[in-house]
Image 1 (spheres, rainbow, N blue to C red):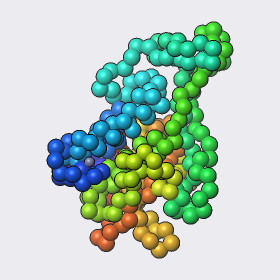
Image 2: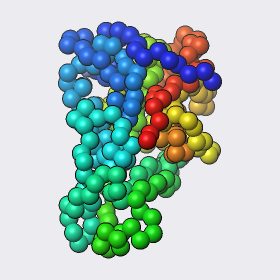
Image 3: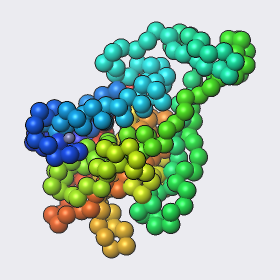
Image 4: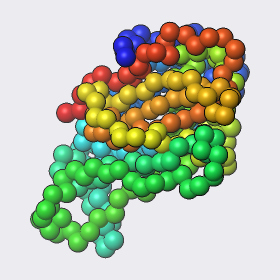
Length: 268
Ligand SMILES: [Zn+2]
């Protein structure tokens, strides 16, 4: 598939989350903090920007903070020189970022409930990659153990849904599909698993940091727009499948056949 190289889309002219038309700002499709460069112009109102910033903040500055720092991924505030290591017995030990024992893990999920229709547990396991944790490293640091960050699956589901929704607006336009993810993205109490899940089959390792694409899928005769997103595809991390919306009548644009590559910089 050929990559899309365009960097900005729109102007959309309405908030892609609530439809408001006042005070619109641009919205990153893949967050800037994950090296995303593509944006939708005039696409998010101030209130929704606040809500989505809080979702991004949890994932980028908490759950993925250490890997982002180690890879020197973009950061508006800059990265800290040191990172915190928590252990069960010692709290708040600070170590130089490049040496800090860290885990990056991402959930491996079953397909979205809307596709499988069987309501079984969505989480299949965890994909993991360790940094500075080779044999003897904890002993060397006189640490008996260390505590990884916790994963809030609900926040993570919102995070992936937000990327999928924004990408689909860029691909099809706001009127090209009937959105299914808005409640999830805007409302803390909606569970994500009907719409957010994993893509079956092995996850490839790619040259880019992330890969993402839209697809038209048929679920029992009903046509949906889906998104396939592989964050950290450069490490072969899990792929996600997100049911973004019901497809409206127009034929799919050529862009559906192309691959969205959200970031081209290589981690160091
Ligand atoms: Zn809004």
